[in-house]
Image 1: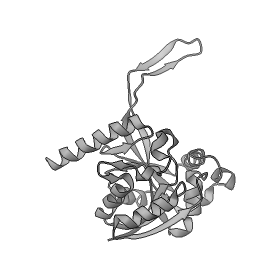
Image 2 (image 1 turned 45 degrees about the horizontal axis):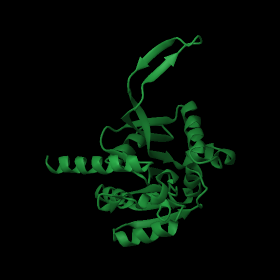
Image 3 (image 1 turned 135 degrees about the vertical axis):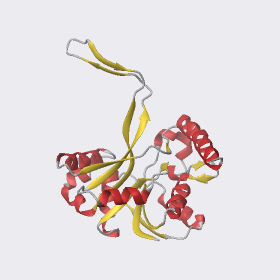
Image 4 (image 1 turned 90 degrees about the horizontal axis):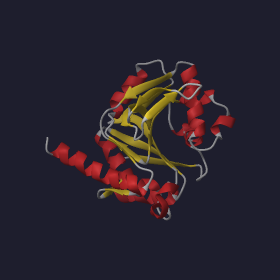
Length: 238
């Protein structure tokens, strides 16, 4: 069993999902017959990880109770900085719960990333953090133009590399940012943190081309449900 810990961000509300998250935190929305959080935890346990830190916020008590109901074998610790806290602040405030480094994932994203390969890739490097990137097709045409509005570049629905919320981060890296950055609104602080590491040439990338499921709206959730079923149906038929 792997002794490294996995931290899961579970604090956001998911306001764009409307009524679906009025009484339910986003990680407890079901994909198929299980919540996305349970799918994630089962996947990580199958990979050999059994120590988890869950950063909760919005309706955190429901997440704590759900984890009990999952009946999974593992050690679960919770860090609660309240609903308003941003991602970087949640990570920073949980740093006393892990040792030299931590695997970080988002509670509303499910992938088949090999966490051990990700972790080993990171420790073999001199990076302070390694983020997972995946190819995602942009739904729009990408356009560039010059100062006189002449189009200089056009590509229809390009496939670009996006950060998908998975990372390995050294504890020492969290000492490189000020409390002003830590207290920035959700997402902004994390971007600044990564930019600091990038300027130091201490931010690495781990490429993932497999399953990647995330959603922010009800329409995206419907697409994800279909994608999830198709992926695992195809896998079972291999």
